[in-house]
Length: 365
Image (cartoon, one colour):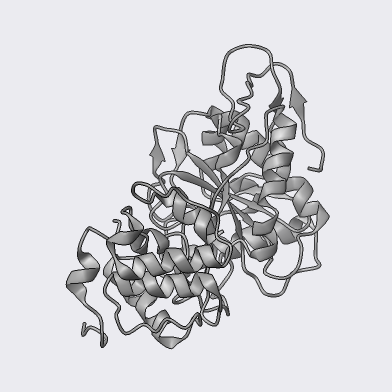
């Protein structure tokens, strides 16, 4: 594929700069929970403590799932993260019945199997606007009940061996989730956390792994509230000081865009202007960067082809490719990226030594 003007493939691939609630929650004192005041984690100790009981979850058989087209992979380890999605269905339904919830699961499975060519539903669980929780991929419910194995899904690119995904019915880019959905989500996440001993800080959103809007700005903005609610249910400390990469979309403006443009230039996209506007040239550079590193960019949609084009989004899987773990003075563009963020209020970073990913996240916050 021909390189775009101003693109230096050798510079890009050099290793120096391109780094590789509310709601009813069943509680039990027969479980094993231990608070860690620093990170909100808890660990199985075999002593009395607070755990979340299993909520009502409708199995694949109960909603009429098709049989998988190939074997479901069951891995002999626990997942590391619980990841929150939205189905990205633009017509947020006002039908809240159980039958509607079951139909959603059948529609998702049909799209994932027939449209995407997957073996089964991509996510392990589905949560609906009516407050119903359903198993997504076969064997997921049994795996969580066992607490030692993980059903590999297909909902977070390059991380499916690490995560257990929950699709929440609807599109939450601008509107809030219904109360019933929230009140069913919290106990589901709390139970999964109990079964696997998942640290509360590891309850994250899809965009914490891929360059996607999912689970929508509104629902993503409530993840701290979700972590707090789960921590409260489990009697552990709420995590604090969590850092994340920002999501930049074409059309965005500001200091973060200007910094990204400097950093793109530093890894070889020398034709990218530094004007603080996420225009065509910046988008093309992000698309090319993703292609070179084998990152597939597309809208997150469990229900159907989304009307949102996420091509060129710059998020969690792109920032690590352009933020060097080296001194800011190692490259003029990198130095300008740091300086521009500091001038506009970026949080202070270490003045001596190499920059770490956490330093970049603080600067970009």
